[in-house]
Length: 382
Ligand SMILES: Cc1cc2nc3c(=O)[nH]c(=O)nc-3n(C[C@H](O)[C@H](O)[C@H](O)COP(=O)(O)OP(=O)(O)OC[C@H]3O[C@@H](n4cnc5c(N)ncnc54)[C@H](O)[C@@H]3O)c2cc1C
Image (cartoon, rainbow, N blue to C red; front, side, top):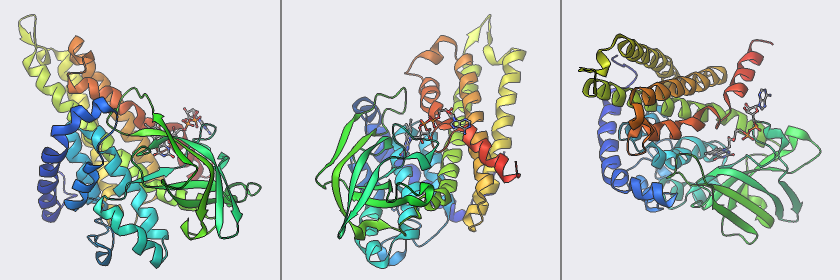
């Protein structure tokens, strides 16, 4: 299927991102998978390559181009090279966390934080989820009590991407524990403050190169200047930005599905059984035909939304639809790919096996499939 969502400028950018992935990610990916996190140098290399701050203002070192299609290209290039797990922290930084800074920083905060984020010297995490509250964001229990010119933060977060490498953590806290969602605020918490600590890297099923851990706050004294946006408006800021996060995951899912399909098609042409390539059996030919169709149809929808994001018209319901649909399609594609690889599909040396474990989380993080359907249902007045 030809795609018309990208212009010549995007394709030129894709060439440079491909080279970045080949040079800075592929040679290290296996080691990062083993050590359970990427090196910090990945972020500075991405900063030097101009990948982290395309949407940021030029006077702060950014590209000054608010076009999410550039972000999508990074995910597509990582999936194409079978190293998506190593790039998830970059996507968290550029696609998901940076927009919070671009939209909510005061001019002073922007000058203080954004240049380091763009250069990759400052690594970001976004901490909402807690052991007792994931889907139910309003149910968080981490508190920030105002004490003079500081907030005193207590609580803990779990499953946080970039937690081990992070320098700044955008943290959802309750500044008014009695006010429900209206009592939630966002604090930018530097990881070198006393009382801030990190857990061990979490033992995940897949995505081993992605750094995921718990964070703990024990009487962490955060200056009030680190409040991001208005006090009590944090929940609404998170809901507004979740649409971008969901597009980011939808793009990764369809890119990963396409790559899984390519591996499966190549294998089906090469692997012989009963004297013929396995792809020549009608059942497998039909399965491959279905996989290709499902990917192309999904890609068309995701591309349509990418064009909308580019002009600032992303609808939250559309993003929820794209997220659950693309991630569920990815699960189906990858699972059928494993089946067609036979026993080799269960061996981690085969990219299809890694895609199978790596992609499983996509229907859960950034809002589960069930929560996406809740949002879509509510948008219809149900
Ligand atoms: C690898 C990884 C990386 C992550 N990165 C981050 C990160 O960087 N920052 C961050 O804040 N979080 C992160 N998360 C957390 C992730 O967003 C949550 O795990 C997710 O939102 C689900 O929350 P939960 O795990 O508490 O599940 P729960 O909310 O307990 O849900 C359990 C099940 O109940 C279902 N359910 C819940 N409510 C409803 C409902 N109303 N109707 C129907 N079904 C419902 C869910 O769909 C799910 O199937 C990450 C998680 C993982 C595993």
